[in-house]
Image (cartoon, rainbow, N blue to C red; front, top):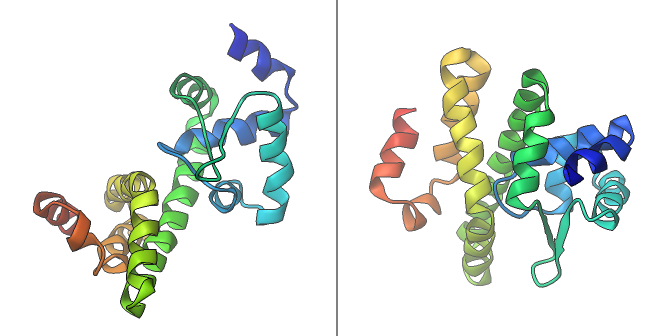
Length: 175
């Protein structure tokens, strides 16, 4: 009831933005939210601040990341139309494909880059997995989904074998 009341008190745009955050299975940063919302990173900050100010979003000071409580994620996820949910999940998947590629790039730089790349990978692992799962589900739906799905193993070619179980590696390649 409290969540429904909070939802009703928000503007239509803020409702949609809050609901789209349900695509994150784990913590996320401002840049990731901006990618899901298709706005510039600077434009995401006041939206995130408003949601946090209204206690609809949690800020984790130690990691400097946002998160939705599990019950909130469940509630807001149910408020989205299927087309809105799919579009947000696709933007999420495309963003985390880039994050996976960044982790690999940093890792391949060597030296301190190895540590940085693995930190990025470990921090974003649950989001990367969610992005790939969406891409795998979309692979059979058409060429765009198949291309997105095929890009995931390549984007993480060097980091994935260090952190991923062989069975999961095989399933990503099979998809």
